[in-house]
Length: 140
Image (cartoon, rainbow, N blue to C red; front, side, top):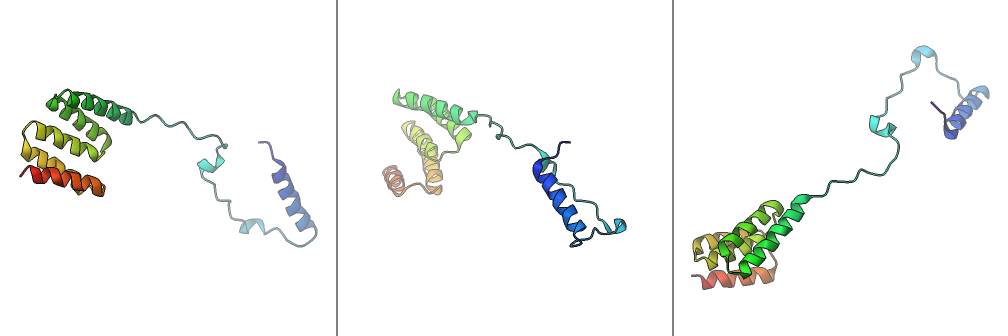
């Protein structure tokens, strides 16, 4: 083990204090073993490991984009499935609204209401709340 300068200086300082009589070394039978530092403290300082990219975000975005294309093409059931996939991967509340829109376009109003209400339960913006409530009112 190679000693660093600060270790040498600390050691010399201790011995200088002992030699000057300012501090006496304790008797050997009273010396407590040093506490072992955790292994983590003994590791060299390095840059943190690179995190693996979160592929679920990319997959969610891809599923959402595919859902948007399908919705615009009026393929509502396929779009709903893509929005559901994106929601399952990301948990983004706005996707519940999109799923509700698909159900509404498919004429499945009960399922649409469920999705809209689930979206509202997640406390969206006031603007989104107002718009969603308008849709729910129109569906009555």
